[in-house]
Amino acid sequence: MQAVKPYRAEIKSRGQLTIPKKLRDAGLLEEGQVVSLIPVGDAVIITPKRLPLEEARREIRNLLKASGSSVEELFTGLKEEREEVFKETYGRKNR
Image 1: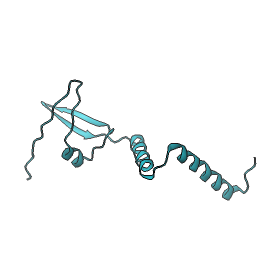
Image 2: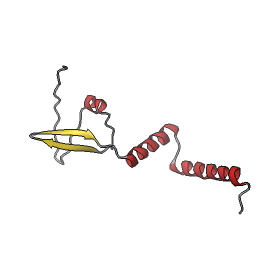
Image 3: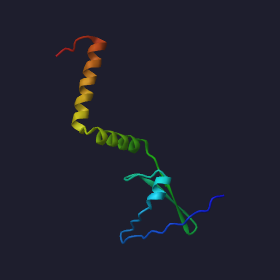
Image 4: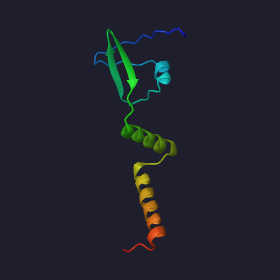
């Protein structure tokens, strides 16, 4: 069994707590992610709470950031793609 190394962190005046990077990495915790806090006696367990909509939003945000695109460009591209699929499926679009 591997020894568990304790980490220390300070709770700030507004109740904020910084989780050390090694623990965030190990728990796959990301900025803005919702977590569950489970009180167990005098301890607290922190677990990731992955919400499907939040996961999708985070993934879209990461993709936009990586591509350098804006939300407006995404919507324009989606509209163009819909129009193209419509034309392929039903022929010319009536205006």
